[in-house]
Image 1 (tube, helix red, strand yellow):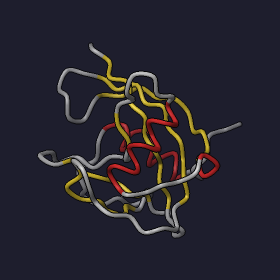
Image 2 (cartoon, one colour; image 1 turned 135 degrees about the vertical axis):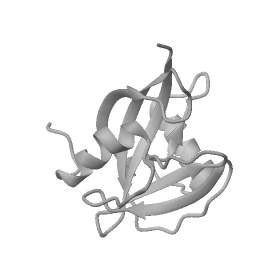
Image 3 (cartoon, rainbow, N blue to C red; image 1 turned 45 degrees about the horizontal axis):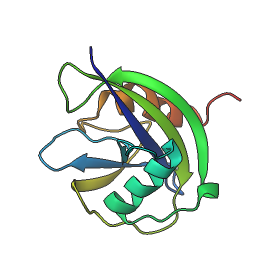
Length: 136
């Protein structure tokens, strides 16, 4: 199965909810992020994506490494994603831009009937619900 390399951010609000996005023309909500461009480090790609998608300009110091995860891709049938994931606690306003159609704050313990990307549903929201940080 082909693998897509992505970066993603577990953006967490003061109330513990996760900021999730849905790209235009899709149904599944996922963590913001995207594909690195040639020559970008993972964190550089993530910071660029957060700026493009949500107008968030966060310093490198705002991010905490979470880990690397593999899961079924949400919007590319027959593909898997290999995600490098960071966490950032957000206290700033965001705006929906670029290919993002909608953003929502989702309770990781009780997400409701929202269509979630497999990586979000199976890995990242349960991680956040369990305390939000990986073991050291």
